[in-house]
Image (cartoon, rainbow, N blue to C red; front, side):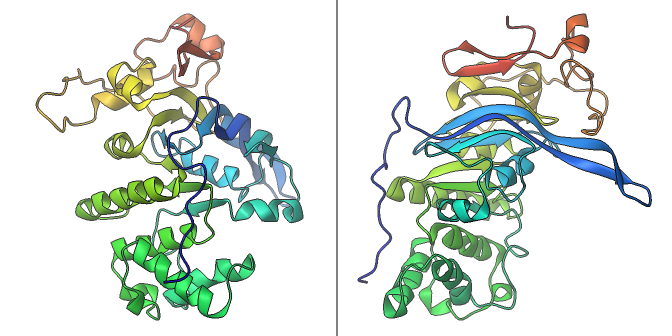
Length: 338
């Protein structure tokens, strides 16, 4: 075919300071309104002052229990939600407060693959129309070249171009997610945010889709922010991992460091629940967290994890721990590491 997806010049290993996305003190609070006049009586602190960075060409995994703010983080970074506070610096430019007209050129550089591969696709449109739409919005390719590009996209994600005129309900769950990946890939983005993109798929299909993500990254030098609750999935695909709890970032480290030497008690508890995939892996003592997850509308004072932490001290109840680098590229927010 004459029209092909283009390889990015930044493909390959990222340099030490080659940062594509930098997040500083990001907050997203949703107002709680009550009464006839809908007065604001409080806020749900879905994302509350988190900071991290993603290097070009790497996969940054974001994990945590349901309700910790992972998906809200992803949608806020895309500006689908307006940030309450903080900075989102993408490719050297602060996009936190950009107006829609200024933001439009960045839309094609940041794409998302959603969790539900069925509800994220318009059931009244064919695959061809779904893939053509972003190209039309951004004025990419026309006529025969556009048709060839769409066929090439389908081949890249493992779909038969002969199915271009079919509707989403005519595909399996794994195939629908491939359509979602093709749509995200259509604009040749620099960053793809995967919002639990394999959690709704069968286990046998999950590995196929994960391998597709990795193959596309190797071919086009893509950067991923991969959101998931399954630590096994995150270990398979990520280079570095951030652990969230109740809207806060608890720990960030390389995959190797996080799984070999988790520092935060919350990370230790999460990893202790992961089944061993191989008999030679180190067996971790099971850590059972007691108590309920507090409400993000009324988070605990001090460290938000202290109500469930087996190592909580008096200081944890009063003082919010600083988020600091305790080892090279290993960040943690815990009073145990001063």
